[in-house]
Amino acid sequence: MDALQGKIHGHTVELNRNPGLPDGQDAEVHLRVIPLKKNWGEGLQRCAGAMADEWTVEDDQILEQISQERKLDTRQDLAE
Image 1 (cartoon, rainbow, N blue to C red):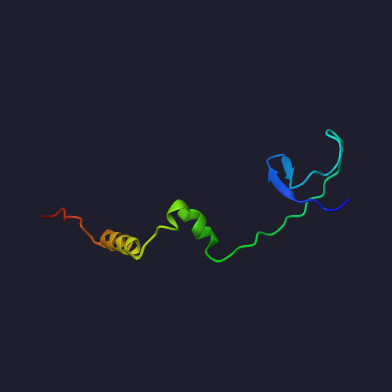
Image 2 (cartoon, rainbow, N blue to C red; image 1 turned 180 degrees about the horizontal axis):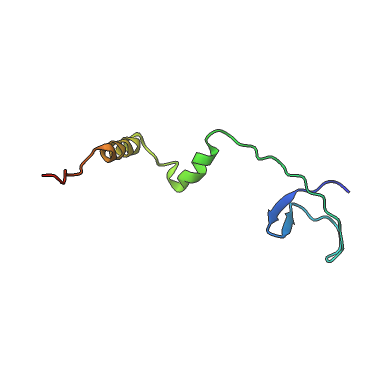
């Protein structure tokens, strides 16, 4: 039998195609992890979600301004 691939979901392995065995058939399974193929920026794309296609240079500038403002020390001296 050819090797099958699938995804782990808790105690269940969801195969990417039908193994051609009857439902309920006992089977022995040997697992080998398939390494993820990571493309540069892929994680950032997933994090950005729906905004990724609409993000502008102005959005970057706004976030940079917020970052710089957070670095300012606006606390008052208690000795005054």
